[in-house]
Image (cartoon, helix red, strand yellow):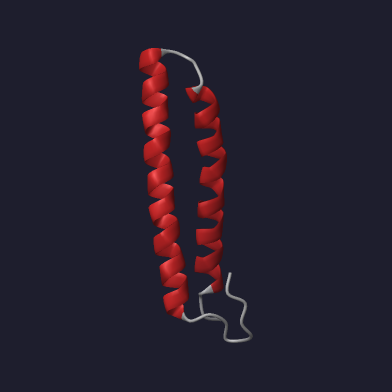
Length: 75
Protein backbone atom coordinates (compact mmCIF):
# COMPACT_ATOMS: atom_id res chain seq x y z
CA UNK A 1 0.00 0.00 0.00
CA UNK A 2 1.02 3.57 -0.45
CA UNK A 3 2.42 4.95 2.82
CA UNK A 4 2.33 8.73 3.00
CA UNK A 5 2.24 11.19 5.87
CA UNK A 6 -0.90 13.16 6.65
CA UNK A 7 -3.24 13.74 4.76
CA UNK A 8 -2.37 10.31 3.30
CA UNK A 9 -3.04 8.99 -0.19
CA UNK A 10 -5.40 11.02 -2.37
CA UNK A 11 -9.01 10.04 -2.92
CA UNK A 12 -8.16 8.73 -6.41
CA UNK A 13 -5.85 6.14 -4.84
CA UNK A 14 -8.67 4.84 -2.65
CA UNK A 15 -11.05 4.83 -5.62
CA UNK A 16 -8.61 2.79 -7.73
CA UNK A 17 -8.01 0.32 -4.89
CA UNK A 18 -11.75 -0.14 -4.32
CA UNK A 19 -12.37 -0.68 -8.05
CA UNK A 20 -9.56 -3.23 -8.15
CA UNK A 21 -10.84 -5.11 -5.12
CA UNK A 22 -14.40 -5.04 -6.46
CA UNK A 23 -13.16 -6.57 -9.71
CA UNK A 24 -11.21 -9.22 -7.79
CA UNK A 25 -14.18 -9.95 -5.53
CA UNK A 26 -16.50 -10.32 -8.53
CA UNK A 27 -14.07 -12.69 -10.23
CA UNK A 28 -13.67 -14.73 -7.05
CA UNK A 29 -17.44 -14.95 -6.56
CA UNK A 30 -17.97 -16.11 -10.15
CA UNK A 31 -15.29 -18.76 -9.72
CA UNK A 32 -16.84 -19.85 -6.43
CA UNK A 33 -20.36 -20.14 -7.89
CA UNK A 34 -19.00 -22.10 -10.85
CA UNK A 35 -17.19 -24.43 -8.46
CA UNK A 36 -20.27 -25.01 -6.31
CA UNK A 37 -22.45 -25.64 -9.36
CA UNK A 38 -19.91 -28.07 -10.81
CA UNK A 39 -19.58 -29.90 -7.50
CA UNK A 40 -23.35 -30.26 -7.18
CA UNK A 41 -23.74 -31.56 -10.73
CA UNK A 42 -20.62 -33.76 -11.08
CA UNK A 43 -20.05 -34.83 -7.51
CA UNK A 44 -17.25 -34.27 -5.03
CA UNK A 45 -13.68 -34.26 -6.31
CA UNK A 46 -10.74 -31.93 -6.56
CA UNK A 47 -13.08 -28.97 -6.91
CA UNK A 48 -13.89 -29.06 -3.20
CA UNK A 49 -10.33 -28.03 -2.37
CA UNK A 50 -10.54 -25.23 -4.95
CA UNK A 51 -13.84 -23.97 -3.49
CA UNK A 52 -12.33 -23.85 -0.01
CA UNK A 53 -9.35 -21.87 -1.30
CA UNK A 54 -11.61 -19.36 -3.06
CA UNK A 55 -13.75 -18.89 0.07
CA UNK A 56 -10.66 -18.13 2.12
CA UNK A 57 -9.41 -15.64 -0.47
CA UNK A 58 -12.79 -13.84 -0.56
CA UNK A 59 -12.24 -12.48 2.95
CA UNK A 60 -9.11 -10.47 2.09
CA UNK A 61 -10.53 -8.10 -0.61
CA UNK A 62 -13.62 -7.39 1.50
CA UNK A 63 -11.51 -6.55 4.56
CA UNK A 64 -9.12 -4.27 2.64
CA UNK A 65 -11.99 -2.54 0.82
CA UNK A 66 -13.75 -1.83 4.10
CA UNK A 67 -10.49 -0.56 5.62
CA UNK A 68 -9.92 1.76 2.65
CA UNK A 69 -13.46 3.08 2.95
CA UNK A 70 -13.06 3.79 6.67
CA UNK A 71 -9.60 5.34 6.23
CA UNK A 72 -10.73 7.64 3.43
CA UNK A 73 -13.53 9.20 5.47
CA UNK A 74 -12.77 12.75 6.65
CA UNK A 75 -12.58 13.32 10.40
